[in-house]
Image 1 (cartoon, rainbow, N blue to C red):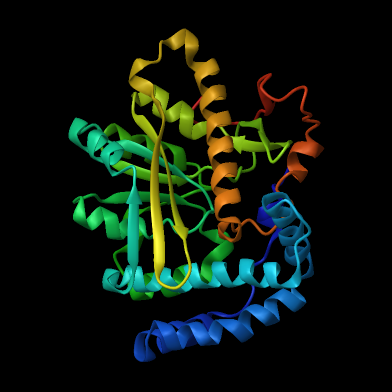
Image 2 (image 1 turned 180 degrees about the vertical axis):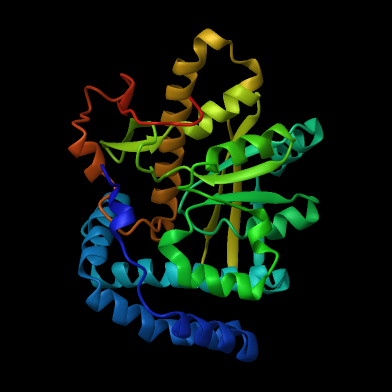
Length: 319
């Protein structure tokens, strides 16, 4: 079963991305943000399926019917975070005001010196971690699926040629083995845990009152290597403001072998619960513009079966 997000094609053109990024670097962030208004309006009017998915998600997160202005704010938040990524790749941290919550948790894990898995989501900005990582002398490798954002990634690599060195591309035969290798060598690795890949093991968890599928491989790798797992998100708060949040999900060092499946389920459910919490707190920050719950419905997951084990089992190199 091919996940719905893989069916989404990248919109726009590389030339258009380069034009906006070039304008941003020459004229400044404020001027570049003005270009985002007509661009967001265009995509909002003509990306019908994404607009429908945005409306359905926002109705859940807002607890009311989503209006046109809500949809525009959702698109504009996405475009802003995407633009800010290029400034962060240029190390322009001075442009942003960043509040860090849970810095004591981050420092505690750093002092252990054993590496860590940062489990994020398509929620706000993961790149904003670069700003906090500089002050903490923290370098984080990133696991990401590159094939559905080739144009943006091409421009990102032109901005920061060193970018490929810290990225592990998902969807390849050796992806999870590379992730395994970095964690085994006490590195910090970030992965977004709210999208599943074909043939990967998945488990259903409650998410906005309906089952949704999440990958289990990050938890299995952390358990095999006995590495701590932190939930991390960088929420965009408007203007030039971001908030970084760090929370403990679980510490694999304290988990006995016979309790692994139970711990995976508990950790995955906690991840889904914290993701929902932050989606409600910053609803325009979640950037999955497709029916997130469709794959669970197709797999036959129901509220009664959530937590009973994997909803869909596939070939997982971490198993």
